[in-house]
Length: 301
Ligand code: ATP
Ligand code: MG
Image (cartoon, rainbow, N blue to C red):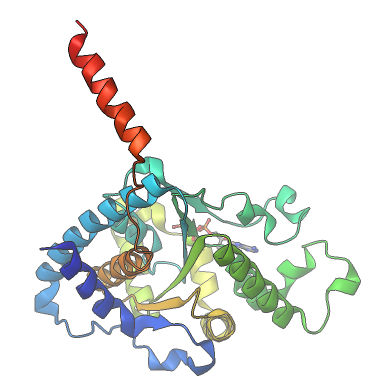
């Protein structure tokens, strides 16, 4: 299949899940078990399409790297067991590791807490020509920290800075930060992998029942599950406040892993393809230099 066709399909597949105007967004309108126009029996076809998408992405990334102007930041947020790790692994599997950087953000260290909340993420922003992946991010600041205000108390903020508007101030700061990045050549795309509470339970049980999955089980994940509704409210508000035309959220149904991966790959392809990248043009002087180098090389022993 030609690149143009793949990009067209990617655009169509990812579009329904793109939120670029947060004000209209309602989480209840996204069904975690949705698989778009695809049915369960289409799964093998979707996996095949994902493989094609992965190859296309590898080509796009090669041009991104060669051009060395834009960078792409992909942010992944989700409840536990929604499939962040697997999605990142599959979607980026064809990409040249030199052009891609994955950073995971867990509970902040004491060094992190000695700085403003964006600091630890800023240190990991992708260089020009690279794709940066954040496995969790500064969005935890309006998600887990909102659900557990005791984390906020541990952030050593001066009392005066903890106003009653702290959450809307954080949204404002995040919007401004992402606008700043966009203006400086970094495309920011955010993914919320939206798994249902039932499917999460199934996946946790699998982690308990299958020896090869035992290592993935964490009692804390079950504890956080108890705050499900609070998390959903925090996700909805975060998306409503930070989805913009320039840095949209994709709210991706995550009960079917094959579908999640296909949609994420499609969204990344769409974003990079929209940059209309091209390999750098070689100047006439450089071309002359190349032909002289070739002559010299051929004449050498
Ligand atoms: P996996 O379980 O697949 O290894 P993970 O991202 O869930 O990946 P964990 O170490 O299990 O990694 O969990 C990281 C935890 O850190 C999450 O519960 C997350 O909410 C929490 N966290 C991340 N950022 C912050 C923050 N700024 N403040 C408080 N907690 C945070
Ligand atoms: Mg975890």
